[in-house]
Image (cartoon, rainbow, N blue to C red; front, side, top):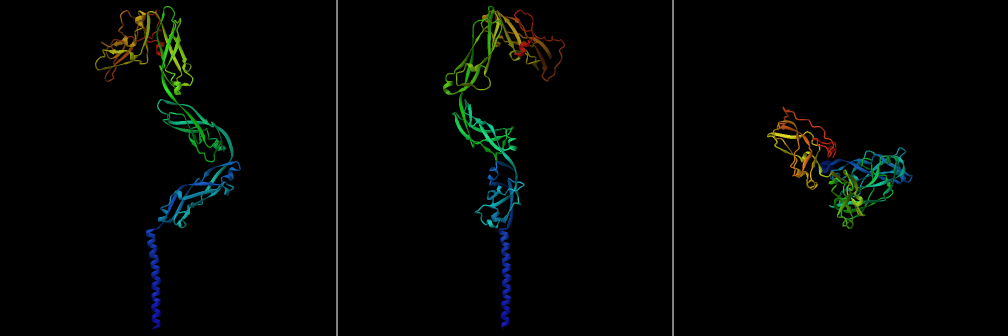
Length: 450
């Protein structure tokens, strides 16, 4: 009987042990199904350099050649691994451990506060940080201020002052070879008043690209930029002649460019500026009076010109009494009686044509290109090239002393050009107009240059 009981207990124990093993295996299966082990890679984790003073205290600088970032492979429970991101890892390299070959081991740790962090396996492949050491040098660079955006409408930038305007830069010799200048970038946003802002200095190469400023020391951590914002205003320009031409001559017209100019300044200074009047002396003139005037001389203190145009070009056209010269372009000449189904073009659109009119000065003074009504008549012209005289609607008492001829090409609407059966004369260059000349002129060299 005792043997039966003993056998029964032995058999039950084996069953119990087997049950425990099966239960454990079943638990492992469930765990691996519900929360399996997984692997994940985090790339580009930045490496923080520790104890840089070991190098800088020796008046040396370093440039990282390899290992400024590290890739980390982690292994652990999926429920834990999936909650991680790059910021959960801290990668460091301690310069106090720098080897004779200028390399130091990278260490990677997971930040505190991560659940089950101790169960996570971290592998970064024994990555190392490698550096190049150089002696520290110091040079001075001018600070250049650039800007983007715009100030408010009808305002412009005035003086721009950077303090300091020259700054010391300390770094390795190899980096100095890349540096072109130190700059700051000011962003404008419709400002109407002067302003001062602080900016961090930035290194730029000759192409205007930013250079990495790591391991670079500036003589000043910030640069103060003061910018003047000025009101701008458009002024009309007038030319006033004084004196009279020589006997037998008269002032035909005065032409000048520009006719207006933009100026800037403080509001109080601009209030004094309404227009600019330029005096030109034509006393005793027998030919055109031409001058280049510095407009800055006619502005009040505190007022500046906006843009690059600072001079006024003036020409007072002097002619003999009783005559007047007009210069025509193709756009001043109308086309009449254009044949049906045809088009017309000038042989040379750039030519200018000089015509001389005679008559009483009082009548000539009232004439203009628009009142002359210059035109060419294509009546009877066929497809091809034609040399035609320019005609005018002249008022009574005015005569055409010096004529102008133009060369026109008529084409059919399909673009075909046919040589006419009756040849037209080939125009000859027109000599410079003189009051005595009665010949029929063509475009003058002087007119072409105007």
